[in-house]
Structure formats: C-alpha cells, structure tokens
Amino acid sequence: MNEENQNEEVEKTEENTNRGNSDEIIELKKEIERHKNELNEQSDRYKRIMAEFDNFKKRSSKERDTLYQSLVSDIYTSLLPVIDNLEKAVGTKTEDEGYKQGIELVLKQFQDVLHANGVEAIEAVGQPFDPELHEAVASVVDENLGEKIIKEEYRKGYKIGNRVIRHSMVVVAN
Image (cartoon, rainbow, N blue to C red; front, side, top):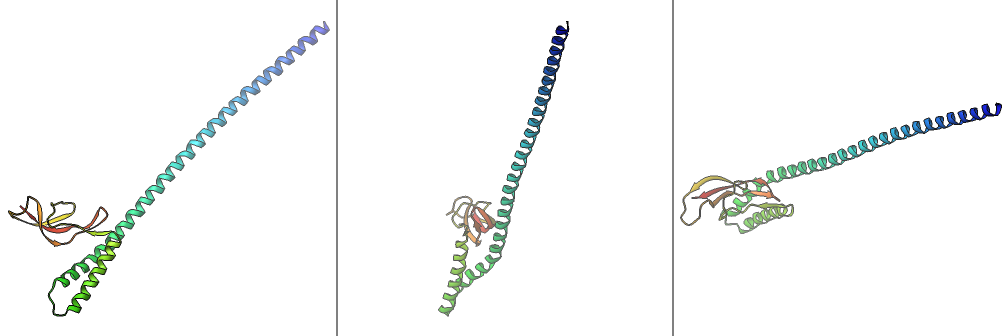
C-alpha cells in the first residue's frame, strides 16, 4: 500500500504541476493579448498623430503660399497707379522726343518687371464682358459691336496667374 500511496501522491503532484503550468500559460496568454492590444492602440495613436502632422504641414504650406501671394499682389497693386501715370505720360504730346523716349523706357522697364514676375495685363477691348475680370462703369449702344462686348477701357486690369489683382474698368456695348 505504501507504494500505491506514493503513486497516488506522484499523480496528484503531476496534476497540480500540470494545472499550475496550465494556469501560468493562460496568464501568459492573457498578458500577451493585453500587450498586443496596448501595442495596437499605440500604433493607431502614432498613425493618427502622423496624419495630423502631415495635414498640419500641408495646411501651413498652403497658408504660407496664400499669404505670400497676397503680399505680392499688394505690392504690385501699389505699383499699378505709377504704371497708369507713365502710360498717360507716354500718350501726352510733347516737343521733347528725348523726354518722351525716357518715359517710354521707364514704362517698358516697369512692364518687363511685372511680366517677369507673372503679372499680366487683362485683355479688354473687343473681348466679351467677364465680371470676374472686368468692372463695367458704363454701357453704350453700338451697332458695330455684339452684345456685352467691351468697347472701351478706362483703366487696365492685371492678374497674376489666374488671380485678378485689379479689375479692368470698361465700357460695355449694348
């Protein structure tokens, strides 16, 4: 009997050991699962932060470009009256041809600077009226022109790319 008792004790010990190992394995699996969840949460949080940062960079770049374009437009807009006056001076009759050529050269230099920086005059006379490009200050009846065709330009308009920095002041026919 003694041997039987020993065998029973060995079996119980083995069962307890197996049960203990099984409990440890279950605990370890739970811990692994918990760590996986934490890792997934951290990974998800990281991806969201990176997406937010990327959006921030794009938004900041767009705002910076918009601000730059606004500043450039303001600078050129402040120069446009000078160009208007130079164009008027070129159109004025004078006895002094050297003086007139000097004014024409200064005007051309201004126009070249504007053109080199992407500032273009808006075509007006003979073109259809476009409220995004032109500002109508008068309307006349003219049998020679079609409906809503620009007859005369009082003041030139300018744009940078597709952005209008000053509308053309025009007279629209019919």
